[in-house]
Picture (spheres, helix red, strand yellow):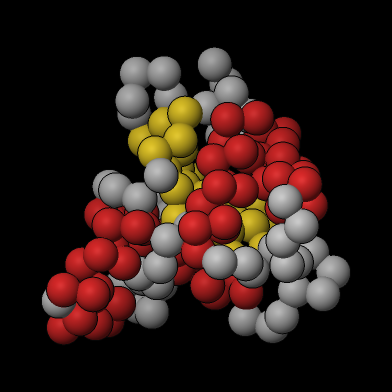
Length: 142
């Protein structure tokens, strides 16, 4: 299985957008990060509001920094907002504790990176991220 190269990243983005269209979602923005948090790809659909890169990036980065989907960060933020405030400070504002940051894993379960989606409900964002990851023949942890 090839790593997270540009062709795979583009497939993730296209499939995430296709899932959003299929479900009648609001315009989406999708970012793909490597395991070090570096941006490999980002696209924003026509009509998506400003600031979407930062939200998508923060969701994906939250997943990477915790080694768990960003839904775990959201649950923690609800219980311990001071902890997620501290994490956001530590990570320079790149920690958004909302569902929609999904880990990309290989067949052995090794984290390859993360996908962050924003634009619709957080739960729908995560569905689109999973669709994109699976279309690129990786495994999603949402």
